[in-house]
Figure 1 (cartoon, protein in one colour):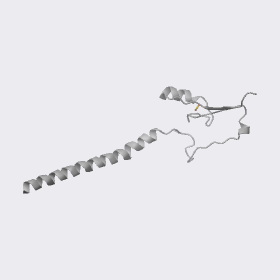
Figure 2 (tube, protein in one colour; figure 1 turned 120 degrees about the vertical axis):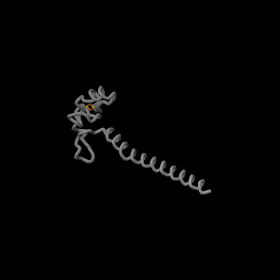
Figure 3 (cartoon, helix red, strand yellow; figure 1 turned 45 degrees about the vertical axis):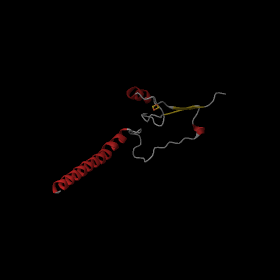
Figure 4 (spheres, protein in one colour; figure 1 turned 180 degrees about the vertical axis):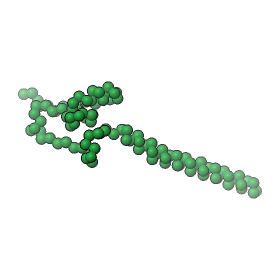
Length: 106
Ligand code: FES
């Protein structure tokens, strides 16, 4: 009876330690690895990082006949496209391109 009780106590201890270690492992993974994965997926790598949100607004009357806006966030002339999306697409296999707004030809 004492031996059986001792074995049950050892099993409970082993199971508790195993689940505790598994829970700590999951917590460690979610804390450190998930955050770093999110950081790598940021779209904006270096534009206006001191602003909490990057917003650009233009009056339609000021656009002229055609305006080309960057959607890849790699342009040195952001928010306008400078063609940097081509290099980004070549390096990453992505397929982003600019937003082009133009007046209808009369
Ligand atoms: S440079 Fe970003 S879309 Fe062209």
